[in-house]
Length: 391
Image (cartoon, rainbow, N blue to C red):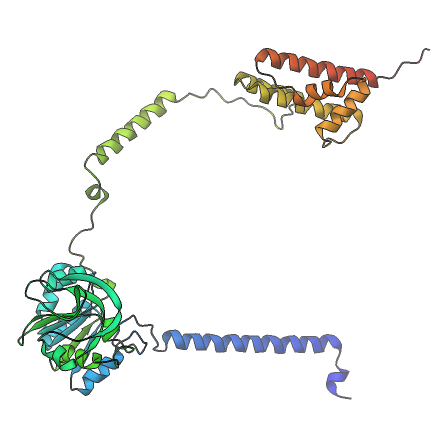
């Protein structure tokens, strides 16, 4: 016989439990190492148009094509890094819309570059950098001829468009669709500012389609160096102080709030009451149910709500009648009324009116209903009294 067969059952169970715990701990360690490798092992989720993202909405393929054409691409993930890179080599600046930057910071950054390419810009960037240009809406993705004299567009030929722009003064529009253009270009051979929809032209998914690759290289590859600026929330301009609530509200709001505060304090002082001396009383205090019921009934009566006052009196009376007749405290009111009517030999409709149905409208009706309740309870008690035997 083996040693396991000879071992006692509790020992075998402990051995199996130890093995199970060991396997569980080992699995948790492996999962933890795998998760740590993913989080801290160099993998980082990238946003759309990120030059290092291989995802369909990334732009790493375009960066590889530009590098193959001899363009040195520098990725700057904050404003200071972008300014340093442009100062060292004032080439082409590529950036998507940066709402974090003020107008002055946007002009200061783009002034350091020879060429500027705006990827999916918004209205403010178009207005500031392209002389009053604006958004013109979005159309279904389609292939369009350039229909302009911009060298990059003419060399690329037909390309995809999606987001449309309206050109400002002195701005050339290419790839016309309806009332807008798919590409805007301002400037000439010396320096230029261009706006292009990155989704339909620059992304890894769109780059191989039609003339997108040629158009992208023509717009971004004009210089031997390119700085791809990825805006960061830390780039927000902190020079201007954040507006206060007083700055954002009409002038009359602050005086009105002060006046309301003073009125509230005055009302609190006016309606305040001075408490009398504390009364020392031994606890617990026992209050009879009758006193509680009558007290609540008086409160309802004082408030002019005769129906609620009578409901309290009826509830207490029905509870006492159920006890007298040996019924459950939870017996339905209709059954209790029938039992009481049978006990006192009265009409059921009359007893039900006293215990359930009759509704008082005035204080006089309330007093009369209370008297009928008392008389009915007295009648029931009278039927339960036993006759005394003579001595």
